[in-house]
Image 1: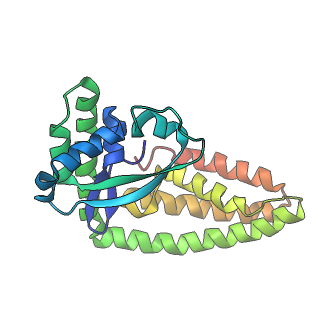
Image 2 (image 1 turned 180 degrees about the vertical axis):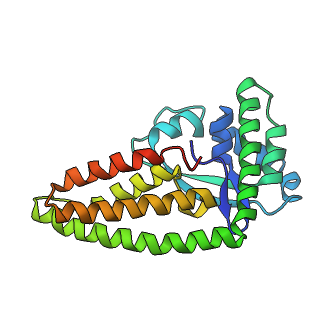
Image 3 (image 1 turned 135 degrees about the horizontal axis):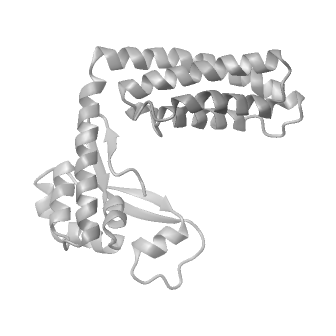
Length: 230
């Protein structure tokens, strides 16, 4: 499932696709409710429509109740962006099944969590951690650049993939998927993780280790940080 709630500027939103998937309804059904009661939803803000690409399997499950004749290619679907009051109104229009009830609780929790994050983001402590993280990230990417050249000399055919691999490794250690919505604690853990990666890469190159072994060294060292940022 997509992230339940996303941050846009200083406000939080979900969309019709997320609600369809979370409640077990087709996207067509969810969209028809919004269209039918559009005046109700517009009382709480503008309804924004945008296109989103989906793989065929997701389309079969949610977009339409009738999946016959669906091509294997990606499908572009128009989804509706919903602010918190609009999303709350929409789920009150759905039949209260066990799945819908669970989703309602999860959605409310995520809206509250993101509201807390918006407040935290305004604090000097968060902004300082973010700035420190940017500096550390630069040192890490410089180390990865050196590693790419080193890996190429060892026969790597796609050294550029190391940027993604090490970014995912650091993010996992901090317990995040998106740096822009990381808490102050998660940013602090991320800074430590990226410092460890940069130092381990440089030490591994100095010791002439195989580039794949350097990755495993980083992975082992970062294991101690797992769960700290949660």
